[in-house]
Figure 1 (tube, rainbow, N blue to C red):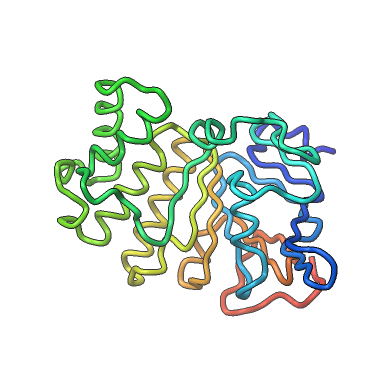
Figure 2 (cartoon, helix red, strand yellow):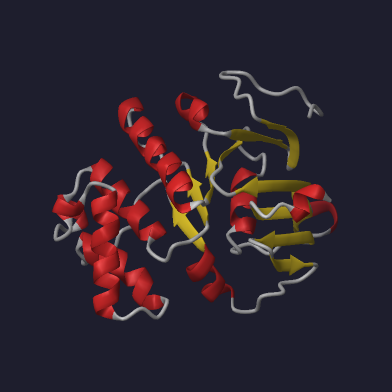
Length: 248
């Protein structure tokens, strides 16, 4: 397939399904998901509650194991009916950055130490990790708050530190779960503009789960899910509209 051969494809899924339970209690959370995301793209995952958005994000994040299908990151097969990569913790540290609705910063570490922590877990030396952490905080315009504890940061500052932490190991795949939910429209726009800049500067793919329609125009593409199925994959965001069942 041409998509599979595209050197810009960082995330490729083919026939990914996920079910929980068996028999009459079985729940099909994802059904035959096929998608590609490219370097430099910010892709929205949109749909009603229970549509499979968070499950899909967790599958791509190698947190949840699929039941069926095939998945490749940056040309390397990760899942093919089973995990091909055994050390999933190392894979997540090296290739994937996570951004959550709440910043989840360690309260007893300063901003710079929170960013350093993930690099040291990946094997970086302390001095190297500190230089990189300071660079990332400067890049996200919170360098002046590097020595502050999370409780001393504003909500917007804490979210920027969390983004710096997600970027610390130079991941090519960044997964964001409702990153603007606690923010007002101005701060939400600032966060999304940062994510767009990151996608471009780092040639990364960013997948964003969101119900927040005020940021839909910041996406390059929107994947609409319903009842575990991908019902539309579109480059034309349509605000306040739901896709008809079975379209796309």
